Image (cartoon, rainbow, N blue to C red):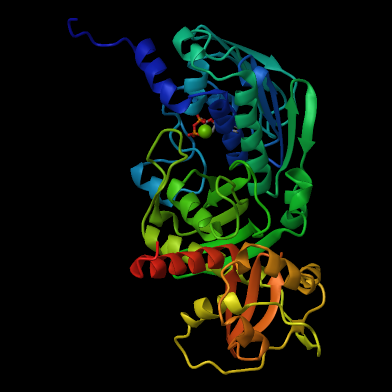
Length: 458
Ligand code: ADP
Ligand code: MG
């Protein structure tokens, strides 16, 4: 094919594809504009996953009549003046691409009025042409986007199901309602109000109310800072988890972002608490001097480059690690001595436990301790265990050590059993040995077998 210069319309459609990948990108760009316009109330309405209808209405500053058409031109923005402004940026938008891109891939209607203006104006875009008129309206802006990608059938084909597109939009709106706590959001899905969030509600109440009532009392406050970064927000406690990452929200300088590296590092801290393929919830707000960030990495502005990324990660990981440990304090074992309790038969484990005897062990008489609640179940198992120990596999391998325990020669202080599967022994003042019966049994059998092998008796 010979080289040709693409016409403006084609160039625009290609560029628009980078900003507007799916209905959720339209919603994101429109709501970000409403936030940048200092709105206090934002209403988001969608139909069919946003494919046929999206409307975002706000009560922000509005667009001046003189700027109305300009706002829909490429690279027209009121938010930066030159490239360096990018590194001081506090607004969410700056590329001046969203409105023009959306208008080039949909039928768009924009209505806006500033508080100085008596009457509002309406711009209707269809097939890349527009029509202007006046309209009575409140101060603020309302943008309606219909039939997204109708003029780009290939793109349209790649859209996900209505449900999947709706879910993506819902997650976004929930995130924004949490992240912009001073703004009230109303979210309407297929004609039904999904939620109304109130501005300035205490986040610890708002999060469970809006997202999951089970998060009540399961949120841990995080607050940490170093010379560069300041982190605030909430993480879920170690005994809460989800099947997906839907409740993970990260804001950097008020911008909702995706960061695999941060997510991975947070999830790493939960690894010893929650099962595989389950995910913690977090709502974290990181603040830093805008100079430490590059937000101009991708037109969708969801990826950010950090200076001093390691400092942020270590601050975050340490503070989450400490909070989780504190929250997950193991139940304290309060021991009450009880006399004259039968000692379960533990002789088979003597040699095994002996192999861990790397320190001087305080020899103590074997005494049974009891604690109140957690182990009570197991107590029953223990007291009836003598018999079962004798009958089951654990004790098949008899040895002359059998008696030594009952004669008080066993070197570890038996504390209790857990679920009838593990035994706890006190090794020294600050050491406890956990013995897994099944593994112990395997180990004993194995040692026996190896011994017999070397005796050639097998
Ligand atoms: P950007 O947000 O990057 O500046 P946009 O194409 O999203 O680019 O918007 C262009 C301009 O239109 C903005 O800079 C802003 O001045 C104006 N604008 C867009 N949406 C709104 C709104 N909801 N309220 C007030 N002004 C708006
Ligand atoms: Mg914008």
